[in-house]
Amino acid sequence: MAAGAAIVGHSRAADRGVIVRRPLTEWTTSEHAERYLARQDTIPHRTEGEAVLLAHIPRSARRALDLGTGDGRLIGLLRLDRPDIHALGLDISRPMLAAARKQLAGEDRITLLQHDMRSRLPDMGRFDAAVSCFAIHHLDDPRKRSLYGEVFELLEPGGVFANLEHVASPSERLHRRFYRAIGYPDDSEDPSNKLLDVETQLGWLRELGFDDVDCYWKWLEMALLIGVKPVEG
Image 1 (cartoon, rainbow, N blue to C red):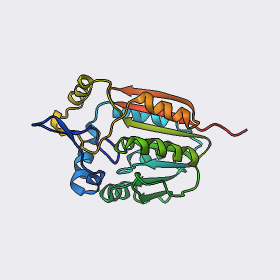
Image 2 (image 1 turned 45 degrees about the horizontal axis):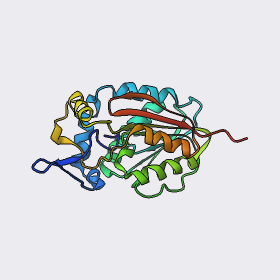
Image 3 (image 1 turned 135 degrees about the horizontal axis):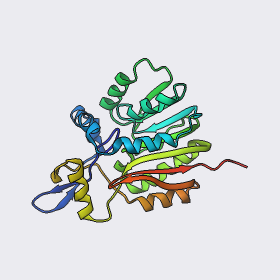
Image 4 (image 1 turned 90 degrees about the horizontal axis):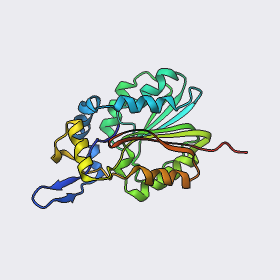
């Protein structure tokens, strides 16, 4: 799932029970993007997770980075209480970025940039906050970890990284329970998802130097992971 991605896991060949992978570039098609955008408001408890994320981004933040911005939903929410914040949104999908430009039209403090997060983040300056919503789980695990390290380097001291993410369940039974809860049939799993458990990701954040690392909110396979870059000195 994602602001620039979808809410569900792998694709299985029904006749063999084998996981089938297809490339992340599926998100560059208008059909795939539009299908997700049509369903994003129906995801149960999503607004609860977003509210907790927003509560942990300081009102004083001047510059924010949104990884996998999709249609700009999270940037729009950030700006409700931070109208002067400058935001940079990255996404691989041109259709998603087109939707974001439409939704955020007239906002002169917002920059939208096409970028494939499988590649190293470009030099974009420093940020007071970095956020992501259901996007990073599309990356391979080694790239997830290296991206977290790049985010750490881009943050100002005291900067917050908040990742509202689609994570792995501890069992197949709970994974199927999540699907039933969100109203998705078992055979509709997003083939680009590469789900990972919460604890592994929290461990990475701690190893990379983040403070106050924890899972701040969770509902089944939706979890909010937060870390703060230590203040120098």
